[in-house]
Length: 306
Image (cartoon, rainbow, N blue to C red; front, side):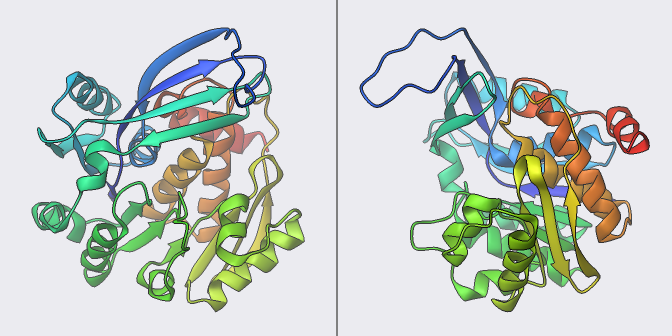
C-alpha cells in the first residue's frame, strides 16, 4: 500500500488581491505568502496526509529554496530520500495570483524540475517497482515520466497521469496507452480534444473520447461542478462536495492525491473518486498549495456527512 510521485517540486510565491490585474496594470494586493508547491509535491503531500506511505522522486536546485523545499515536503510525512539536489540548476518556483473569489493564475519556472532524466528513473527503480500507485504530471520531462511509468506497470502497479500543463502540440497517442488513468481538468480536456466540456454530460462524453484515444480509464475534473469517470469498472459523474471555497490553487492536485490514496488502499474506482472529490473540495477551503491538503480525519468527516 504505497504511492510514489515522480514529478515537480517548487517553492510557491502567492499574491492575493481583489482581482487579477490586466496587462500593464498595477494593483495593490492584500497579502502574500511563500510555501511548498509544484504539482508533484502537492500530490505527494495530499496522499501522505491521508495516511498512505508516500515517496517523492524529483530534483531541487543549488539555491536557498532547495533546503526549504526539502524540509517542507519531509515535514508533511513524505519520504524525500529520492529528492536529488542538482547544484547546476535553480529550484523550481511558481508565481501565483489569487483573486477574491479564489480563482488563480500561475506562472511556473521549471528550474531543476526540467532536468529529470533516465538517471532519476534508474536511481528510483526499486521504489517505482514496489509502488501500488505512481502519480505523474507534465511539469517534468514527459519522456522521463513515461520511463518511470513503464517500471511501475511492469511490476503490476497503477499509473495516474495528470496531463498538465498540456504541451502546445498536445500529447502523442502512445501517451494515452502508457498510463492507466488520465485525469485532465476541463481546460486540459479542451486542449486534448479540441472541445471544452461545460456540463456533466459533456464531461462523460469527453471521458469516453479520451478512452477512444487509448486511455484505459479517463477522469475529467470539472472543478466546482464535479468529475466524470469512464473505465472498465463503469462510468458516472460524481458531483462536487459543497464547501466554501477561498483558494482553488492545488485543488486538482489534492484530488489526484486522494485518488491515489484510495486506490492504494484497495478502494474501487467509484469509492476512490469520492475520496478524491472530498480531498479536492477541502483543499479549496484554505489558502496555499501543499499546505491546503486535508487530513484523513477531515476527509472522513466530509464523506460521512454526505
